[in-house]
Image (cartoon, rainbow, N blue to C red; front, side, top):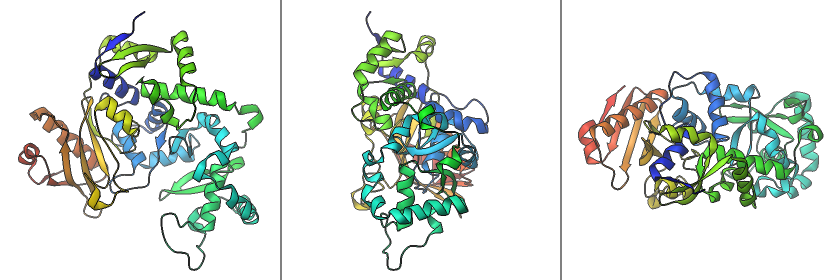
Length: 402
């Protein structure tokens, strides 16, 4: 049986359908949509930069539309989600706790996220900290003072911060809420009193297979090489797993224009048969699953993207926290924005369109609406524009009121 032949446009749209980004939200957001969106993506990456809305909130906005940011925190506090290292630090549906438990039980495999020497040298203090939490309840790093003379800096963590992070990686502590986006930690036994590794745990090999399956569903359309990055899997048995999926009919081989051999999650076959048509325009976070694998974004969307917030300003090609622009199935541009919260103004410092993008009146309208929705959601009352492509500058002048 020969593989289905797909255009690159079809491949992009099937991927976006799997990610919940093919069409605009069909109704006003509900609290349950937050968990549904995270389950559809499998993972929601966490990042604290907030020149505009913090990344996890923005990723959800792109999929569910206008919603209160508190809904994400409430889902975490209810125990519908947990935090752990997956793609990077992520919110993950609690039913997938077992998929990453093996990492907690072997934290010395977690690289910089766990320091065995530190835990051994500070054994007494770590034990005292666990006793303190058991007797006094949840804590934040901010509850503990830094030692006198410690120099400030991103990695100049005070000892209790290091204790907490190591205990988190080892699964002894869990995050029960975010308070001003700071982690609040409690004992795992108190958060998940019914969990038993012997009863509920699964072998690492089975966990890896299930993580690959989650990745396939969330990518929808994928090359084999794209699968391991989703959960940062090393030495994953991709070839063997794909053979099993093909035999079971879980995935379908397809040949994609310019990409070559790919695979389609079988659940998307009806959508392919009906015909796909992307109608959505929105802004994406730099940590959105669609672009977090920079190589995949380049291969699938011809979108060469880098996050430059850690690049010295003089060496940046674009800006500090540049947001990709998704327009009707393509990544057509990027913008550097900042939310001026006191002034209630969204400042667009610069907007770039990809080479070859043609601007129609429909495109202008779509971009205007997408930026306006994004600004309103963050509480802006106006959009101010600094530097734009000429066509947009003529149409929009210096900005607009909301």
